Length: 291
Image (cartoon, rainbow, N blue to C red; front, side, top):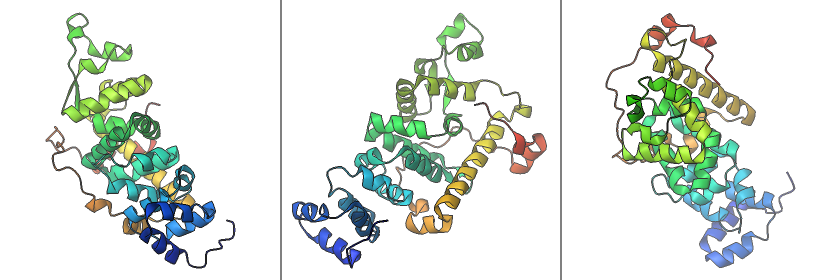
């Protein structure tokens, strides 16, 4: 990193935040990128940090050179408002992928409500952001989320009584599905418009029988593989960046993220099998999910 000329970045951050926006922008833009990042890093409050990023005409470089945790913290401040577009648009695909993994799982289980809120936030932030986010999300994670939120409701089955054939031949569209909620329908319709191949992979994941899905536990077996893959990605990320989950939790309190209480619960009321049950069914450590 280049030499930082500022003697007290924290004091400079405080002074900038007390200036009017135009004066602060002129002052902040006199610094090098390294100095701007040093100033931003001294600010712990997400909203104040966001103000500093927006003091430059294009904050893309600053955002992409910042820790993922900082980007996630700022985005979560706006969760449910659709006002995180500027931050999310500037984030790199790698940062979006990291954020998705960190937000989606809680105690090694998919947090449906939090993940749905995040998907809706990215959708409302703009189509370009939503498409970038989709490319960053593991297809199997999307399959796990949508698994019991979609059902085939195909009028074409009057002609072809074998719905799986329609899935195999990529003849399914959003109009051939029934949905838990209007939000789920909107997400699927926008996903279909953004990436037809991803939609097809999602349909295959959810509706085609898996040869390794023993005794009717297709969903649970696949979900276990998805969780393990996400856990491995998070651990690898932590090793590369020298970040611990404990440090992340101190910066971003994911347990206390405020979400819309109107989010719908999962439709399935039955408890799934335990991890021990699944271990008895199949060797999940060596399970190969379809690419």
